Length: 226
Image (tube, helix red, strand yellow):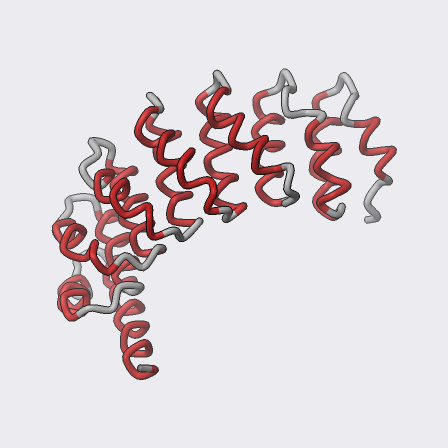
């Protein structure tokens, strides 16, 4: 199936029919970023939350210099928490470590757990070691999903200093937390990581045991390379 021309997509994005607008936005998949972004901007304030969400996500994928300031503004000012969470997630896709400050602020100040969760995930995605303090604090969150995001992110940024902080989750009730821990430890080569992974390899949940096995293999490979 051939992608419609920019003119056709642009016209469709102004259609009164939501389905037309959604199809048009989806058709931007194969359009170069510099052509796609001006068209994505047309629906950033659409009446449909679903379409807005798709548009915000698209700014994380179709990367141009313009995407960063737009996403920061949405994260900081949009009244809808779902859209703010989408913006936080899209900033992670951009991988621009200028976003560290805005994502940290969103984590500390946003009242909605979904936004804080997205911010924690994206702090891992941008792989900036300066996120250490905020992610360690996130481990104490009341929300289990935020604990999971923080553990994963500390693994992503390869924060060796975090090992002592995350090992307390080796006996977490939620198996997903234990799985995230097993995955993260595979990026954190220390003797304590290996000991914890050998323990998690015997976990009663197969996903946790499998994640631990894979991480042990990864750590063995890292050691062989050194």
